[in-house]
Length: 248
Image 1: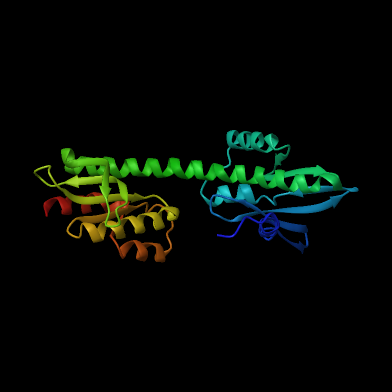
Image 2: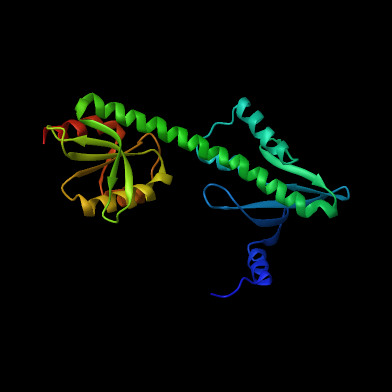
């Protein structure tokens, strides 16, 4: 193994930063990321001899793209996030003003404030997923009753242990009969596909049901992907599907 070379590491870090001119100023991409993995970019402009650094409202747009409603209470919360980094949050935009000597630090502060705002989308996403998973569990429990087990630890073919959201036991309450997982949004799809793929190889005789939130708009490719390793079930028809499985 080669020894660590500070210069090489510095060059690698610098390579993560890129800039280009736009009609609105100079856009700088920084090694800071939103929950989606997208790099945070800031825009630098000049104003009355100083500099204005802002995130072009990308942080707040990321939230709205995840279905988060921008309420007064949320705006106040996001403003606190921005002020913690010495910035302001106004009309959905994170920004700060600075001198030429401060612009490098200002870019880092704005980028991190924007990322903190984007992180609020992950919190909302987790709450939405938990709420939908509970709806799936309630619908399942109403039909299978005491046969339902939740958050059961199951070891896949790879040796990895999964906590299956909902496991339906057979009538003797001794063996799993159905694995049921909820899929509240597209971000969960890769995780569920990998899980069901692993379980399919280890438990080929156990049904695998993926209940997805059909109140959302889904790209067809997501459903096709889920269908390769499980049976995709829209929540609207989930109860009928559960009754049919129970009768088997």
